Amino acid sequence: MAPTDKRTRMSWEFALPHAWAGGSEEAAGAGISDPAMENEAFAGFYERSARPLWAYLARVSADPALADDLMQESYVRFLCAEGAPALARDGEAAARSYLFRIATNLLRDHWRRPRTASIEEIPEEFFAARGQATQTDAQILLEPALRQMKPRERQMLWLAHAEGYSHREIAKVMGLSAASIRLLLFRARRKIAALLRACAADDGRKS
Amino acid sequence: MNFTSCPYEKEVRQLMARGQWPDACPRELRTHVSTCRACGELVLVSEAFQQARAESLAAARPVAPAVLLWRAQLRRRNAAVERVGRPLLGAQIFACAVALFAAAGFAGFEARNGVAWLTWSYWHDWFVQLPQAAAAQWDSLSSGSLAGSAWSWMVLVPALATLVLLGGVAVYFATDKP
Image (cartoon, rainbow over all chains, first blue to last red; front, top):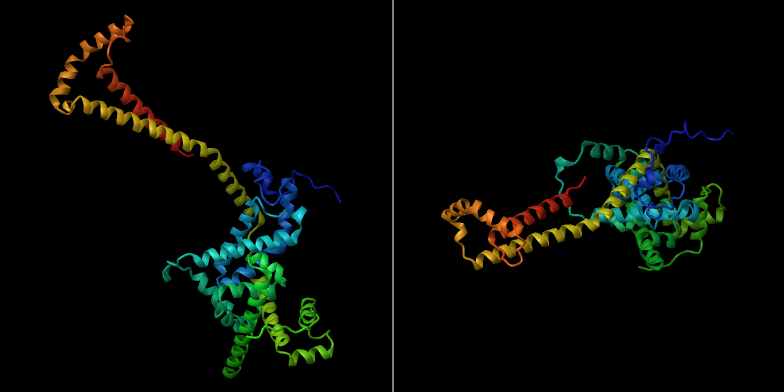
């Protein structure tokens, strides 16, 4: 395979010289040492993690537009964070866990913020996206059930059952102890199972 | 609520993670799941979430990674600029303090000498006497006898005014962000 020609490579850094000069190497975040290599590594990591992260944010927040914003913000914070795990040194699993932690904190911040937006300020796409979202089978059952769960329960359930995270990994992402996660997850699972059964029964009666 | 987990849960979870549930798993396990509450809930919830995840993955429209790298670079650069500009805050505070000190000193000085300078006649006389007083001051400076002569208000007022003006200019430049 021929070596990559730097002049022909479509990298943002060639269009923006000294792109990493905004901070020191220490401040560059994600253990960036060689910008070109890190650029490619990040692109690969992003390719593999962006969709699962968006799915997590969209399902837990029930707001695709918000998920778009929070996903971008999560990656920007990941890239800027001084303590972020380096892809090459710490591995992708650690980086992904850190990324989900950032996203979880952003969601928490969003929920804590006072809601002042009026109905006129909400874009039409929000409702369109929600309308489309109710067309699939999984969402017909899962969406109403998830809406009745607390935000923290939604986060835990998604990480455990959609992402397949262990109790320890969820604890790391959510900033709780593994023992607490085990108990809270058990309760949340029991609750959503009952809701799913109820939704399925309702659906059966209607059809 | 009883917090009891089934010993088969781990096995069921592993089979689901590998995509072997329900077709490629032993019949005994399937029978167990149909009768065990914990395992039944695990399968029900996991299947719902896995299906929702698959749909969401298909619906995701992530932006190009270069956009995020660019935004991160901008943010780091802004943070670096802010770090560099932090010492300027000290200069601003110092300039403000000097200006305030000068203003307070001037006010104190004038308070001791009365508030006659607020009247129109005072300023009229001042302008009339200005050339003579300036000439006298110049003579005293040129003869080197400034140390012996008392500081007159004619020197003090312009000096303080200049100081305040320069303080204001310094504050302006210190707060002027690119």
